[in-house]
Length: 524
Ligand code: GLC
Ligand code: CA
Image 1 (spheres, rainbow, N blue to C red):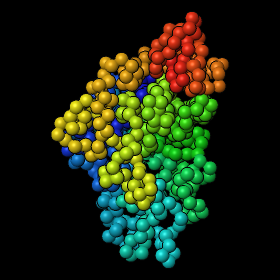
Image 2 (tube, rainbow, N blue to C red):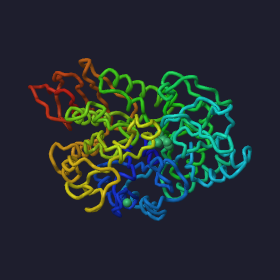
Image 3 (cartoon, rainbow, N blue to C red):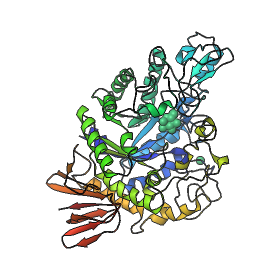
Image 4 (cartoon, rainbow, N blue to C red):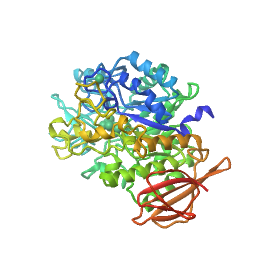
């Protein structure tokens, strides 16, 4: 079905500030993205997800929105946004934009009004203002960025912010808040976007009575126990309403949940037929490079998510986590594993999210000088957590130039790029045999053409050694095999017509000898 393009789509995440800088001020922008659309179309992805570009003081990279219906002047104009969506469609690419409904910026007109208004006023009721006890905040909730989740005003009241103090949480029990976001959805849908990535989709509803958690480091507990401010059942009512809005468009537009939940079953609740279309599979992202654990999370995802009629999704990196080449060990071994991992991920049924720069084999930049760090986590953690800037370093497009082609020569990117990235640039890797970029291109094009890749919702596991993941998939009379060797010794596998391998391998008669940390796709 044409309307179901998203079920097996490969969606490329663009972190706006770090993708391409058109006007040379050091910050990526919408015209920059537009100029790189041919690159994305050529790479072979189906859609882009663009992180927030709305009017914002940028205290949290744009996840602090001051005006949901306009573009931040550093990133472009509303006309640029319109032009970008149109140009992307012209290249056959869909566009998903971010929506940030859990909190606004403290510079949003509503929060300014709330600050000017008295405790108990309707202006304050759009946010979560409460009285504390003596000098203590209303409860023990913690900010995801470190420290307490409450900030006190001179008049004595406290307001809740699950993130930075410049990101006050909205009160989703207030009908004005709900109406406003329906309207914002329609604004961007009318402009032509194909869907939304919903920021902190598990956070908008807080448990009645705001009970204490009674523990420290609360966000690490989500896996083991419910938290009064995350994944509350009430959020689903919001998505049922949003679905009605999305469905008024033809073809229906989609909603993708950024929801951190304890289990895949809890995640599937966001994907029931009258709610959202996709949710990021963070259980997959957080699994290490270990055969048994990966097989378990694949099986678990493929059981829980299709059970509600939704496609599974797969993701390894985004703008909030260390790049996976680094998580998998870093250096040549980490990159080798990352290359093996992409063939595994692209062979799984469902939809895949890529993060800009992973196709270049970029690693986390771990040694950014302290004085350039901008992530609020750095300050909020009292300089104990360097935060997420290391995965947000601007992309290298060319070998030369002061910004490696991210911006014009002479410009200075907002975060410094390692000089070694020159040889990882798009220019250096294009057409270079064996480069990570060409591996991605080859894999994405094969995935598009091969009927057994993408579609469907199951894999057929084959008998293999415990450290080898080997499965096949069949469609339209063609069977594709995917095997990954996560063990230290070469693995013997039957051979056939090899379509793609993540690194070199040997052939021994009728067998393939697959080296450690290598994956291969073949047809028997
Ligand atoms: C999401 C975003 C993250 C942001 C946070 C607060 O987790 O991905 O970048 O800091 O929400 O909006
Ligand atoms: Ca710029």
